[in-house]
Image (tube, rainbow, N blue to C red; front, side, top):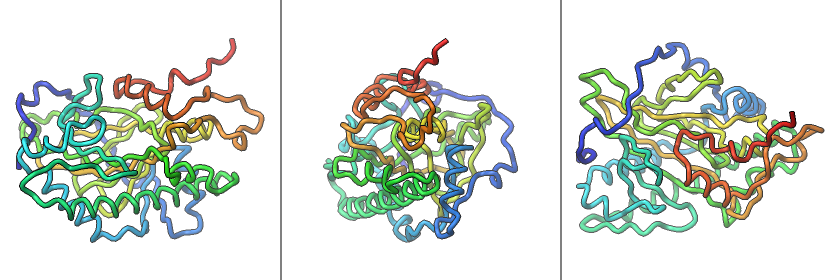
Length: 328
């Protein structure tokens, strides 16, 4: 397998070893989508963590495994071949550089639109199977995202039930799909350091659906700023509240800050569906959730907010420019 190109890990960011809770796996909110109390558990998880795990999601493991296998085949290609699918501007293959503002990580990735097929510019390899698997998987992710968003609306007791999901189902939805590959990093196994694979950030969209192979590395930040490792579970999906959903709920749901640490022994592959609204959609707190409260955020379009995130670093407070300053 071709690893990331030189120079070595000296150019990347490390974090100090911190004490990870050994009991956190039982504290992660777990939602069984087949149960009648799913809507209430989702609301509580979004309020307390901005993050939860779902089971009985209906996505066949065979389809997941096939796509994962094809993704690994792609990332095992020589770098010169993979680069024919790039650069990621915005869609395509990227390597180490995350965004346009100097963020780097021990990662390579494919960033794809969900509205039209990306033109893979690869030679010497039949990727039609990969393309078909991606298409089917992205459709399944959209359907699951909408189901979860409808359950959120039900749990919040707001109408119409599709107030969130209609933005993702819209033909002009600006949703994207990302496949991240974090190669094994033998240096870490020797020196015991924690290397940043993908730096801390929140997702700007409405909702994110994540799954990975059975390799650790994903972490979330609790309300007190403590970073906690999330035990991997290749058969389940993890759901992140995004910035846009935080605004639409007027801060009742919190966008979760998260990051990925590289693994010293095993490669990590993650696939993330980001459910986003149309570019022209106005994002503001829903009147039905205000109940006489003042809005915590200025209204903005998704186009405006998306552009502002492109102009920021990963760790920046991206919502800061849109938060209302309370009158003194």
